[in-house]
Image (cartoon, rainbow, N blue to C red; front, side, top):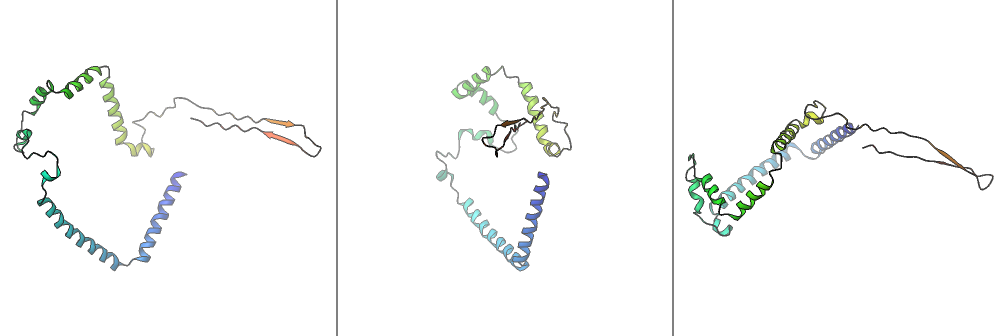
Length: 181
């Protein structure tokens, strides 16, 4: 039912927009707007070029250094190997942050990394096939068996009270609504 309402709302929206565009704008208006957009883009293109050519990082970034000590890791884009891994391992012995991270990692050895990896893999498969799952095309990646079966029982009870006068009659009806989970 909700799908029908959703699709009906989409159809009404598309029809309304198409009617509005067809009745309020002519082809000439669209051509003029498109041309204005092209002209605007061309003017902004030159502004962007000027901005890049005049950019001075030392005016933007605090403590900017044109030649940081890490520059030797990035000498050439074709460079295959750098000593960055060895330097990082050596630096961990002298760095408080690296030592704290290592200590936390050692304390978290109780985490079952394989189980965690399996669950992450399963969740990734569900994400990759979300459309099929939501639209009922497949349930390969989810367990659709009910864990618990809920039953709702309705019972109707009536109570009667003695009327206060001859002309009155009172009847109460108890309604119990159960919300399944």
